[in-house]
Image 1: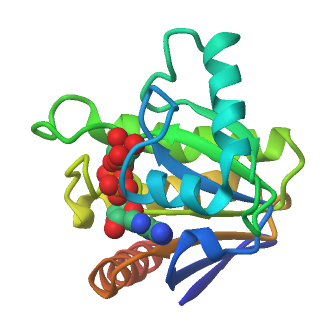
Image 2 (image 1 turned 45 degrees about the horizontal axis):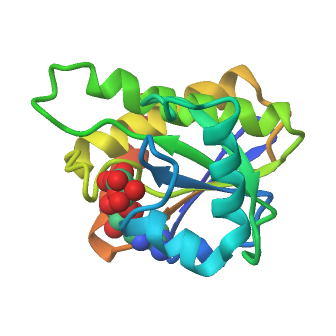
Length: 186
Ligand code: AR6
């Protein structure tokens, strides 16, 4: 399923983010930047040690206290087909009233801004925070897609493609329904 916004194709696909051939894939990391489970573990396993080495370097220089929730940094893609990995830290879902939606939106916005700043034109995202961090996927899908769409409306000429890569059939269907709803509401 795709939606065209300005010059950009916003695509939803079901699949594995580690196999995507794009300028940058986004990692749902934690603030240590030193790896973990879920999509983070899969990216480090597939990309090899160069990604972790750059993350360690960031921890020793610009991010000695770790990466705050909602912010983003960039490293090489190592052995991945993607040339770069943008690491962002999603919010842990607590109650929904602890600023989770704004923090999740910041992940998408800051990742897209960083990609633009680095001259990258194709970016693929996983569904940030909806695994180990327990953000309900129906709500996360609306935040993710509305944030991406607002960013692309403000920057209609930069990106060739922004792709959401959903790991499960269920998540893919949830994102499809959310995109259809957002398209209808204009
Ligand atoms: N490709 C695409 N999506 C994937 C893949 C993959 N290969 N593997 C998992 N997912 P999660 P979070 C989906 O838990 O909730 C890590 O330990 C998964 O099905 O990876 O932001 C970090 O270090 C789910 O829909 O990230 C943090 O400590 C989505 O990716 C913590 O988990 C996000 O699930 C971050 O938790």
